[in-house]
Length: 142
Figure 1 (cartoon, rainbow, N blue to C red):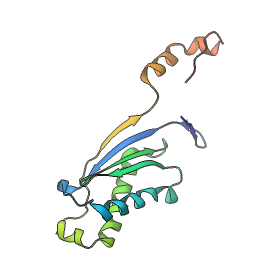
Figure 2: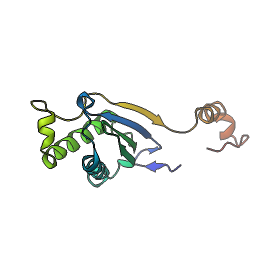
Figure 3: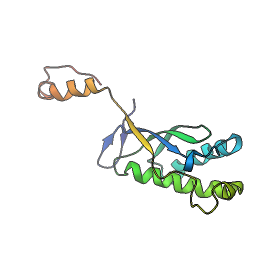
Figure 4: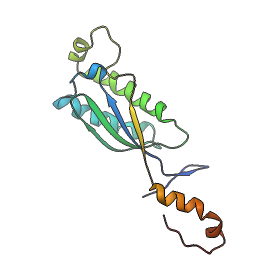
């Protein structure tokens, strides 16, 4: 586990994000899915503080494991990824306009997100024992 730093924050904030294609259309086959992975990995070039740790696709959805700093909301980052990848994929693959004729975007409006973090029991113990740890009486490790 590696803590990341900003000017006024130290954080470990990783998120598992799942984004589905609109109408669960199976458009992320072969080359389209591979191109999408490359696009998502480029997020860190524009936003160096946002890190894409893993990305993978199925034919109708994409899984991401991302480290997002506290200064960005998860919804802001997801919307940025969806907007940029959707636009570039439509430019690269004109057949997507036929699949989504008359509909803007290839992504569904929603998404799934869950946090990935330190074990809850470890955090509970850390918070419970905070006063003792500060006085040097308890030895806790994260």
